[in-house]
Image (tube, rainbow, N blue to C red):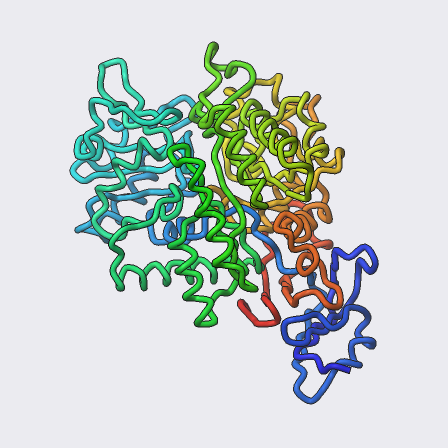
Length: 553
């Protein structure tokens, strides 16, 4: 009998294995799980070097999969001015002014995590409002969804945006009735002109555009590796052992590869190739090369990420029918039908998985159309192509997910009112008629569609237990509508086996069973004993990736 390196006992083990859904102990032998069962059964694996960990009746489950995050920007954002739950002019001053004082030589003061209702439900965020916070130094306030930024007047002037600017389709420098810019910048190609004002760093959006940074010094590379490591430690502290990054380039892979070589890659991490609207489809060759070059136990590529639209709050999501508050406007898709179908077919032909940001129901439909075109051209295979977010779904498209084998990658933190995001302007823009088909988790679940839960960090709080709480306690926006709430076990499954399946890892991750990788999290609470509103208070007490402790409280 193989000697266990670690026995976790006195636990409430949720295995996610239908053959043995519950146990009270688990034996780990290095990187693998040796046994799962009763404490007495695990004694057979005990040897002179076996460590014991008393879980004290707390939940133990597979290490969680963060199936949609932006690792570098999330980690880098921890160093910037955070506006989580900040409301009002005075509260904003209380955050910005000390940050400005602490960074006297910074060319651009960056604040992240702002709500569109920063100044109230009916009050727009304008450069004039931001001037009341600080007017003599460039300031940019980035919305929590990272699809819109708001800059003060001096930032707009220095960026050459005060009189407007031509930007690619789907992006916008919003103009006011006086003929000058309001300070609102929709999508990254609009607000990138402000971001270049930054004196230090400048790589906080590393990978979001898929471009490779130029002329990176050894000191900058070392700093970027440190940022990545900070992010990995942060993820491990929440019980994550696998990460599906949603932006990428070769440089990020190089950074993580360096960490892996030093034994510091604390989470299994997947980096995609980002096919932006400006890149030719022939650039998918880079995705194939990334897949070939990076395929270790903890670091790999193999996926293509694309955006089909923006977000509802700024009116850049693409809808089948008009926005409820803006008759005649449905949004502009970022890829034509022909281009997306060609891109999907080419990526699929080479065995690459595809993940597409699609929020509006028309964007979701266009992505499904592209996946269908790829399947017709290349034949059916276990492609597991993904759609990210699915904030609104047209009823006619529900059945197509299961038919095409598409994975629904969803974020329980995102529905307005479910966690941190306010009801407005989202609910008014979507309109009551579409509310039942918004974030339609239950409809998709009823169809047997594979679901992976995630946060989209730093767009939302990365804490998976707050995500589970949001999923379990979700309420409808109208009493006659479905809530699309999940139960506890469904939510935990979607954070473990759901993410593992989305990453083609269900044969080695996502459940606790002999022979699976020893990716395990011990929580600091018995999740099943908590009231629904208290689930978000639980945290990881011990996280192991491949049998190695990556976090211990």
